[in-house]
Image 1 (tube, rainbow, N blue to C red):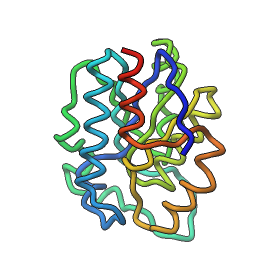
Image 2 (image 1 turned 90 degrees about the vertical axis):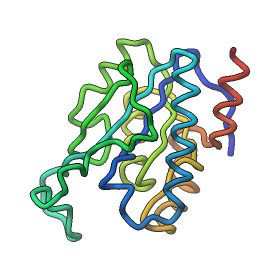
Image 3 (image 1 turned 135 degrees about the vertical axis):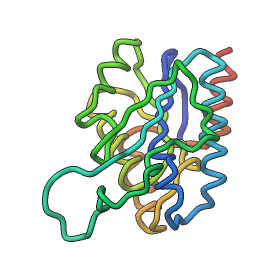
Image 4 (image 1 turned 90 degrees about the horizontal axis):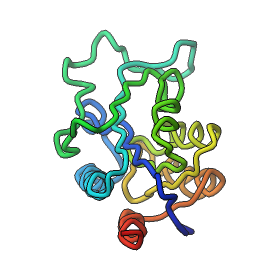
Length: 187
């Protein structure tokens, strides 16, 4: 872990902590992931920093070898954000239909309009939604921080691979407590 600093205008991006996703079998206790993401959201809101809540309602078009969600068969509340995130009126809510929160959405424009230069990313799933969002943020020119104890996946191997091999190439990694400590040091 090599978390060094947060830019003055950093946003928190919480990926896919929604009813239909948190119900999946995951390798880390989802209650812990939700609690840590919620703690980060509260810390960002207290400091007047942007909080982005991302949900997913579909998938990118195209053929794949592995089956995807049948969006016609999803429960009505599949995309509802978990209540523990305590959605606030000033939160930015992004509904995506791809793995990453920047592709085919206006998230880049919204964050840059607010002067955001860095994002902290949490959520589910580490190797798909979280990694894709982090990759896209990096490619859009944002500094990226990944709170690795506030994310999980359906596969321990996929989670570990992203944390060890991909994330250090996209930005800095650290814990929820380390991110909050950096926020506290700026106050």
